[in-house]
Image (cartoon, rainbow, N blue to C red; front, side, top):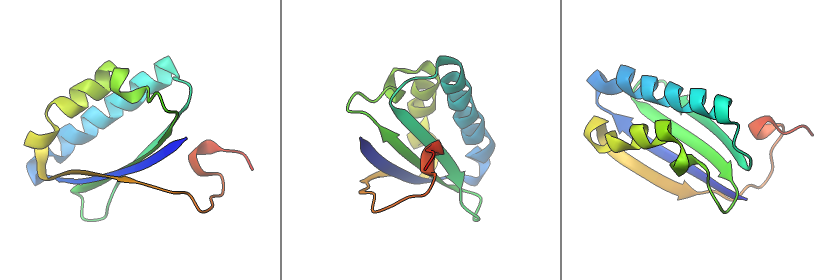
Length: 101
């Protein structure tokens, strides 16, 4: 499994649109239920910084979803600071990503 965190800051006037696009990704994921993917999105207290955390198989299903493609299509225009992806190495977790322990 690969684990990644993506962090970016959107322009203040783009927060609502970004949230709408993110919610559309979750709606599609709920409908299609792709295997090998755990995914979460958070908005930081500043109201403009978003963090996405994903765990996926080698064959990441996210880029294949139409809603994610729409989300990514305008991301650079929505951002004040562009997305930065960071590979993560899990040290430990407790029920992270819906896992039962």
